[in-house]
Length: 335
Ligand code: SAM
Ligand code: DTB
Ligand code: SF4
Image 1: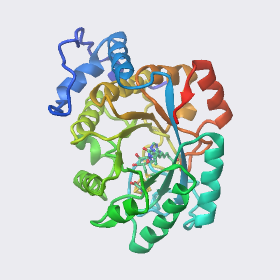
Image 2 (image 1 turned 180 degrees about the vertical axis):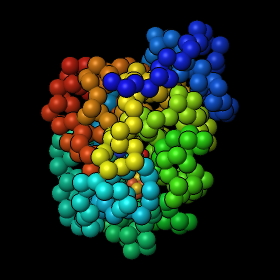
Image 3 (image 1 turned 90 degrees about the horizontal axis):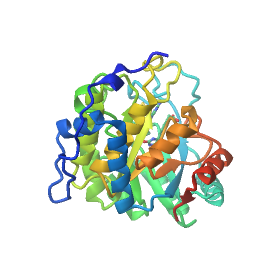
Image 4 (image 1 turned 60 degrees about the horizontal axis):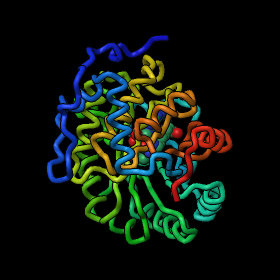
């Protein structure tokens, strides 16, 4: 297998001199995060797990179920994404789902044990009529007693307020990667556009869910750059999804050299150390990941997963399989 050689980077032997940070002094330099990623694996995981125990139930996992409310045909050029109209993938375009369809799916997710329902749409950003339909969906899902999350792309001023007024608990919008690597992956929207949307979300009092993707051919430095960007948001996100690239045939990133799984675990650990109170989500890519690697991710501080046999367009482990894994590891679902 062609593995990312950055796993063989020089090991830094003492990370104890790198201080933890508080919200009043939140700044993590890229060099400090890189030093975490370069540390001996045991030192890194021990530190991450120690932080994890200090702030979280060490055996609790939050379960979110995803649904794609509008699939495919997206005008953007994100190099990883099977839903971009310009790439030829097997994804079939689908018009927006009805409120009834979404509520039925949310009720099934709740019955299966999910506590949060996340609605995703393949848009650059929503139009006003889309916001109106989304607010109906959010109200309906909320009335089932579930937490709500949406990921709809860039938001214009005022749109976040409308979503928040309907009861939206979280908005997911990822930085995806480090600023230096970003243009290799996406050209149709800028890093600053993403930061502006996060500001809109914060301003509306909605919790921020923001993370990125690893395994896109980036160097370890870029993973450090992503984590530093996230950790330095003021305040850092409440929820941090760390996605492993799901390689989809037809997308430009299909065929990228596979990332060493331990690099993924290291990224989770760095997220946990730098954002101690956040929920760190072991997100896309679990279907291709061994149970042992997932267990290491939980040890390193991941405490949230996508639950349900589909992400947006690609597969995720079956719920029965996840229940078996959780039982094996003694993990319980968080309320
Ligand atoms: N269209 C909206 C946007 O891009 O903001 C919302 C949906 S988009 C699919 C949400 C996120 O899914 C992306 O920002 C990216 O981080 C993640 N994602 C998309 N395709 C992926 C893939 N093949 N592997 C891993 N993560 C992926
Ligand atoms: C996030 O960070 N990961 C999720 C969610 N937010 C919307 C999406 C993963 C998508 C994986 C590719 C797909 O299924 O289309
Ligand atoms: Fe469109 Fe979102 Fe996919 Fe980018 S990630 S192509 S914006 S659906």
